[in-house]
Amino acid sequence: MTIVKIVYCRPCGYLDRALELARDLLQYFENVKVEIEQGKNGIFDVYLDNELIFSRYKEKRFPENMEILKEVGKRINNN
Image 1 (cartoon, rainbow, N blue to C red):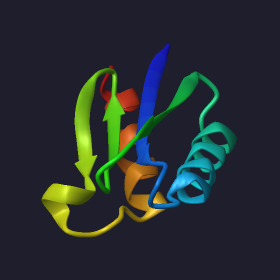
Image 2: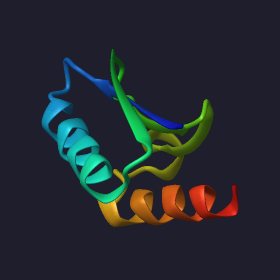
Image 3: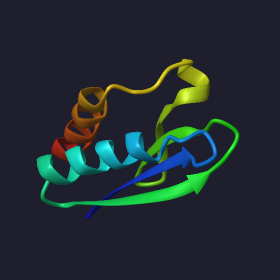
């Protein structure tokens, strides 16, 4: 089973964004487990099987949900 972990900044109010992404992942994929973890300091990182696939800090923006869905789909289909 593929595990997607979303680490979000709780003090920044990013919970809704994390929940929306988690909902989209769970609706789109059958064999994906989604974990949501509280963080701080403006973090919004997305990991796929412990590999960082998106960092708000590095990209200077939030991910589009579709961009994460495409990346997860690409990785699942290659396995």
